[in-house]
Length: 201
Image (cartoon, rainbow, N blue to C red):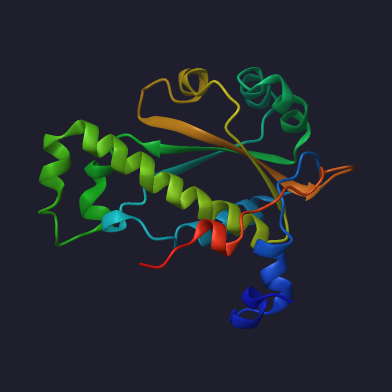
C-alpha cells in the first residue's frame, strides 16, 4: 500500500490496474470488440484540452491490408507485436482542428482568430493537446482491463502518406491493445521518486 492508494478516491484494485501495476505490454492475445473500442474513446473524450478543442483522432486498424501497411512503417522491434495484437490504434491530430470551433466551443469563438493568423501556433496546439488526450486514451484502455503498448518507433511521415494522404491528420503514436500475451513483460524499470521529480516553490 502506498500513499497513492491511501489517498485515492477509487479502490486499490483500480489504482493498480490503471497506474501502479500497469505496464507497457510487448505481446498480446484475446479480442477487443467494437463495443470495447468505442468505450475506449468514450472515456478518452473527457480528458481536458485547450478551449475544449479535442484535436485527437483515432484510427483503429483492423483489416489485414491496413495492418500490413502499418507494420511496414514500424521499426523492426515493433513489427511482430503489432502484427499479432488484437487491435491497433493510430493516434493523430486533426490539422484543421480550429475549423470545428463552433462545434467544440459554441458561443465563444474570439480566440479562434489567433490560430487562424498563426498556423504554427495552431499546429503546436493541436499536437500538444492531442498528446494530452493520448495519455487519457492509454488510461481508458487500462480501465477496461486491457494492456496498452504505445509506440513512437515508426515512420510517421509514411503513416501519414498511407492513412492520411489528404494531409488532414498528423500521426504521432501507435498503440497496441489487448490482453497481455505470453512473456508480455520485461523486467520492471525504475521510476523516479517524488523527491527526484517534484519540487515545491
